[in-house]
Image (cartoon, rainbow, N blue to C red; front, top):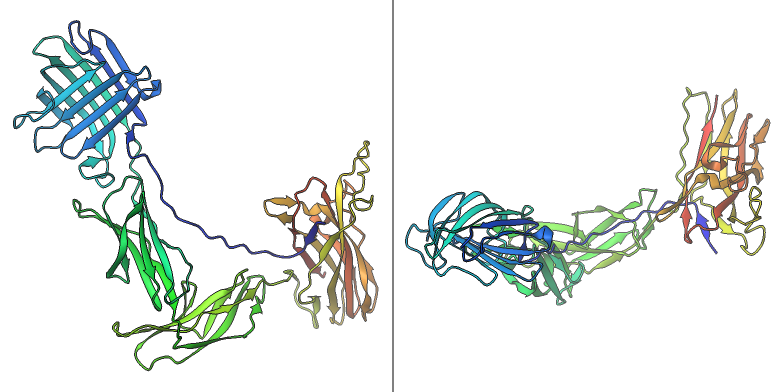
Length: 541
């Protein structure tokens, strides 16, 4: 059976941070190499060539920070090319003209190097030149020492084999996306608070993949408790919990760079196995949130605090709630894990804690009621009241019966279209104490019925107003509003998607009102709990 409850739900979601992966071998997102060869050239054999990623050719490269660029090409047809370019010894590759280049290998001071080979052919000796029109390197920190991220390159070259005049000429265009930032996460394998002596694991994932360096996990700002990479791009530390509040940060450093990168701070709260502090929470058995904000304030008392300078804090998990005595807790399905921690001003003195105190705050079970009166006040008052805790549960009629699965009158096939739910709204009263009692009208309008991502229109809800068995002592004539059908019962009805009268009238005293509710939902609607809020509005002329 399905049920539709008129209530309010609050959902809290937690997010997880993990590493972002990119390939270590740089494959250019845009790479084109064009070459033309003179007749008699030993490498190109007088032909033209165009190599590109768009054509299915695999183009990879490594850009060393000692001034050397290596490129390899595996064509879609299985052919191979290699292209190397180097600055003079001790220099970096930068935009400019590099004349009088010679083949790969050690060169004389001030002499650049280059070598273009392919299809199993190359030069025994060579001379040539190349020009770099554009070169944008990325951060040096991403890969192993001496490897850079290369973001973009435009390079033209001319090569002559064995001192001969025929040349191989070409142009290289590379365009990579900007380098992603280095990020470090940090997480503990157990939630706070823990109990002293428990073992747990701290992991620190780094991104992007291929980042190298020394990864340290710092304990309370000074002590290295672990690090290194136990899995690709994840640093790990094995820790035994000590009583108190402790702070962990993962830090990545490189010997060849002045920069360092750090993770967010991870706070771990640990209760002592032999508590020094005694903490009590009032009310002692938990409580319900007082209203639809689904938060409640409790009173915390802590005894046994050392008579020395320091700070006392109340933690919920690893969240610092302050020093008390009043702290605010949110309604949630699992108990809050409260612990008191005293941190002495003298860091050589140990921190002391209470035991872990579970505490429950239950969600508010209430229907928010909004009453609006825009007229100047009269002597006396007109009051709308809804009994505390009022909620209406609609119960499904037997779907195997025509009443629980009725045919839609407008469907000539006789197909049955709707499930039917019914219930009774109660706990509503109107009190009139204004001497001239000019009259009033009470209307109701519903919100849509929500079930996760599914929403049913409020027009699916109808009602039939009624007096309660004890209708009260109101004088004068009180008239009930007309019944409103569900739109699935009467296609011309707006249902309670539009404001409809529950009752109206005049005369001193109190009248107690209710209504028989009927919800019809399509028989194709997803199963689950559907919730809505019914808003009552009291209007007086």
